[in-house]
Length: 235
Length: 75
Image (cartoon, rainbow over all chains, first blue to last red; front, side, top):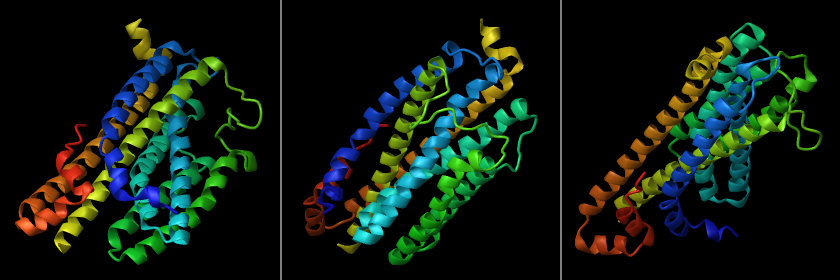
């Protein structure tokens, strides 16, 4: 069923892809910076501090997306007994954790001029911090368990518990009274953000997605070479 | 113009520190992953170099091994 995931075939593509992804990332990131720091307007209430949104929101979206993908891949790997899916999931995790940290830190910086505090134990912020802890547990599990069967089981369990937190993060601003503002962008209903701010936000999201793809490809290639190193030992 | 861009009505410190933190995080992650890649690749090249001719031939028959040896992942 997963014959197209055969490492020999995939490596032919993944070993060449990073340089193209890197070039595209640089172009899109530069465009995103110009749009978000120079061309986009300031907000009538938050003034220029609204520009923090252009790094904070894409980072939060991508960290949530990556964790959901890791869960899906781990579960599929477990159900279909495909070790390669675990390898893909493992390669996604470092960029997911870094984007989660970026979302927390930039959110904290944004909180100071907006709410008057660097940190509040508010539902959205706390649930994002919990997600970072799940990312950490996931990555630590890969480091401390040498036995593959064990690590597959444990990382899948971590992602199953962690994924419960994802809808909590998404709906925390609706379920509880939080300092954090409700979502301005909604796929199913009307978006309340002005196009002049939506455009830079989407460009930055594209740039961040390209960066996570670049890191994923580099990490995945490293993992494949690690496996091949063990293969050479067995020869 | 430059002053306005840096100062941003007093919000410059918050905006620039957020963008700088993001940029530094990207750079750190990239460098860490790149170092891991180079380390593993060098290990592979050195192990491959130590194989006797028979084993090297077996290893060379696999496409992925050839690809690892030929690819320098230029980024």
